[in-house]
Length: 140
Image (tube, rainbow, N blue to C red; front, top):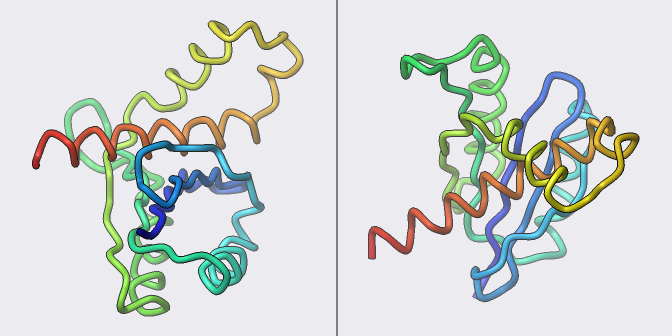
């Protein structure tokens, strides 16, 4: 099987997570500068078999798109053009940053590490991917 890649798109940094080849386990992969994101994804896709790219969709509590959607939508459309044979989907990313901080607290990570925004972004991408995988199980 192929992998699923998840993206927690940010204005400065972007967290990336990926599944194993059986698409069962989500792992944080890395955090990259957003300006280097498309190059990173292109390079990664050239060496790994990825079937789906999941892009976190920032949604407000009332269900409307957040301000960050103005930056994400053009990126999402570029991905569709770059990888026309891949499934590229949005997935609701509400609360992922809060959940990432909670996961860090529960894991015993020290205060200094919890302030590492790149780590928060990577964990957020992992949570998006875990939630996406769970949603696929429930639709089978």
